[in-house]
Image (cartoon, rainbow, N blue to C red; front, top):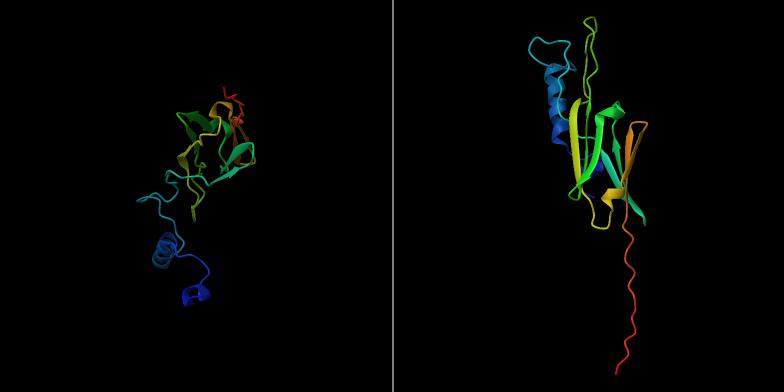
Length: 152
């Protein structure tokens, strides 16, 4: 085990370092634009996704907290599964002060190549508790046939 691993179990992240430097210089204040103390900056984001496989299907689970069901689109086209939608920013009242905004808002798109043994035409999706579940059933594998051929 090297010295770096012994003293630090976390992986190095340049974004964490930039955040730490930002906090060092500016404290925990959030700047969302010149003179805009109560606005929320919209930016694209990418939801976290898990993909698992069983004997009969592939399961894609995407974390979409606070995304309305009507703001989610799922489609399979030309062998590509596409998840897209939008998490809308919360409305901030004039009397409220924003101290920190770390969650991203705005549009998202995630695309994945569908395996050849998955049937995209029979895909199903449901959304519950902020998690989108897309099921891609596997195509029934053709069973090899043995054909006896008589030798003449």
